[in-house]
Image (cartoon, rainbow, N blue to C red; front, side):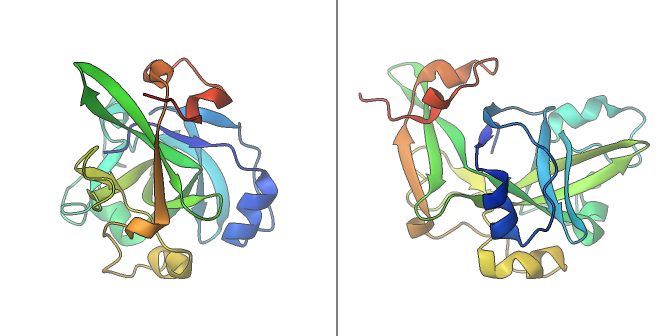
Amino acid sequence: MCGRFALHAHPDVVALQFGLEVVPAFETRYNIAPTLPVLIIRKEGASTVRWGLVPHWAKDPSMGARMNNARAETVAEKPAFRDAYRSRRCLIPASGFYEWKSEFGLRQPYYVHPAEGELFAFAGLWEQWRDLQTCTIITTGANPKMAPIHDRMPVIVARTDYGAWLGGAEGLLKPSAEAATAIRRVSRAVNNARNDFPALIEDEPR
């Protein structure tokens, strides 16, 4: 799963990596949690939406709080995601994401970030519910480097596949190569979603 991530890149870096002429204002954050605004990239350009997908047929937006992730194995069939999978895909820029492992009875966070470059591009879906736009991050099985920490991870779209993903291509929902990711143990301060500061992503010695 992916329950927290960070985006602290300069807007110019985002624009360069995703080929954008305009990047909407977004807040630098080190501990993004579901229901917060996040930056997404669509074929038409970039915008900010709420994290936690609300299907267009939902009676109210509350179900979005449970829809921050969609499993790659079932995203094409699940009623909440299948329409968006067919026609409302997006990329979600991230400087890195957090995952937790049980250590000595405590939830120990790890920060997963690009081994090279500054940004991941998560495979995402977006949806329109009345005047509210929302999104979800698609997850898949963990790659071998990630597996000792958690059995799942976000689908990370390779830069060469951005256009293919947004254009509806199949076969891209798979774990990233081990060489694309780096992992470090970080402070348990990230466990509290109210904490949001640069030291959250710094290495935490054992």
